[in-house]
Image (tube, rainbow over all chains, first blue to last red; front, side):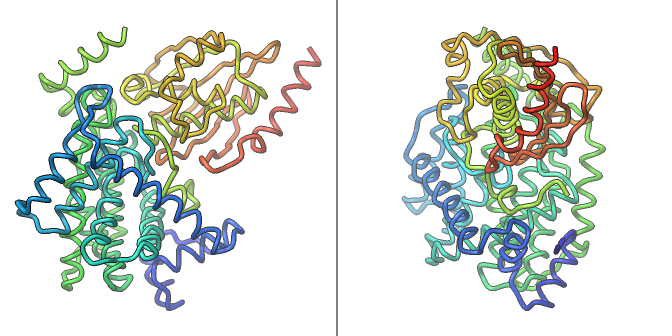
Length: 294
Length: 170
């Protein structure tokens, strides 16, 4: 049984087998699950389709979430981008719109795909469908990208954590952004080493980020952190493709993320007892929601 | 290595808003549904730590009841689970505690569920990304990994049989 437990092992395995990270994931999955590769690819395609549906429905839905504290921003953002006003360039601007669309859909209890969690579900679809829109990366390639992302996510999840309750937002939006950065690099022809390098750079940028959802809802500030995650993913990918290296190896960054998460007080790990959740406005929102419920 | 498959990372396909506080909890409820062979007529649910603090915002209560009613993680009816439970005549009660003495994880629940003369107490923990684990069935510590794509009826079967034998013995 092949077990890949670190980014170092992953790069070595890819170089030894002369495979990309997505091909390595597919091979490992087939061995572990006993399913044939075609079946696994079909299952992943199904997930890409659900992601696309979430983007398509979210991008034109201006309704607010049941909480009343999110919704309508994807419509605003995509209209602004469509008018050509955006400062961030096409790749990042489109990714921002798609990411908003997905995360708003999630807040409405709509169907989404966790990547790796629901709270961070906007980032990966954001960058993937932006690549498709801007350089015509075919859907078949995007499916490959999902295998790259899941390989990176598996290493992170097993060495550290991927949920805000366990390790803060750095573990959730941080991991998703790191996965997205690496995925962009692989889809743009980078080596496994460059993929892992982008993953490290992105994760470093979000180290220490706390999980402080207002009213305990996956909306404020989660939705906008997904949006910002897409721009960090593109920046980290660009740096890595330019040949910039992370001075701290990726496995050590993941280890640091784990330790920071362990040191994080309970109030800053998805309990809604600290950070933005406990601001004056945050507390007002919580009170209003809970009064309405009872 | 809790996370084994690419679909533990990319997935589940689910209704929002939270993979750990919504989707993973549907799975815990669904496992209990399979264990009893049907939805419970009575249930007492204890939410610990993060679940206790944020269940309303994440719909964790709806998720657990939805699972107990037999729903899957991508069932768009989950948001109406409280109403559905009432329609079925299910008597449910929620309790909230800080720390669970059996499991050191913020996303933990212990559910006691009754169907006819069959009572089970099940401990479940949601590990993130929609992946969950059953760590206790009655007094026995277990480790049953629940991934949204799995067939829970097969996973519940070994424990189901034993429960039935016990009930008959009484």
